[in-house]
Image: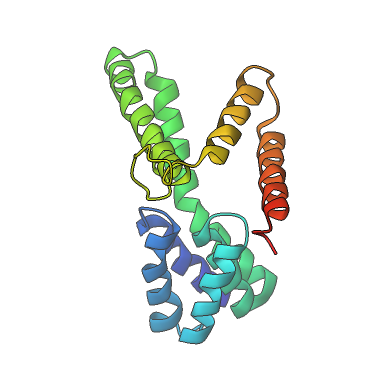
Length: 191
């Protein structure tokens, strides 16, 4: 019975949490603390910390953690399946609709119109990361005290290794990290 309650609670969370894991936290809190009393506020704080530290989506990590705390491995499985089931059904339905209607000119026109928006969103996310990395103040200014050359050189080297030499992206990220740690050790900033 408790596994079924876990499944239903996280099914509701999976159905109504739009906007990512952090948006799901109030829903998870409402279910596991207020409605069912499975966790205390302190345990919920630990849940958030553990869910952020472990790899994977926060909502799914939370479901697994709560399920395990309440009913062991069967509870973890029930809560996790409840959390991911709505997304699986939704994506499967979208895939079916796409396969069925992919040649429809209206759908192709819609997807074509969305491409520039997706590219712009990805570019915006990239610039949000790059600007504070390249400029100390977080604002684009080429004043000598504001511009950081080392991150620019690492970025250019990474692009060359990825595009020109077709290196594995994970290897390039690790290499950049090693270069930065080595620089920090040489300059004495990482002590």
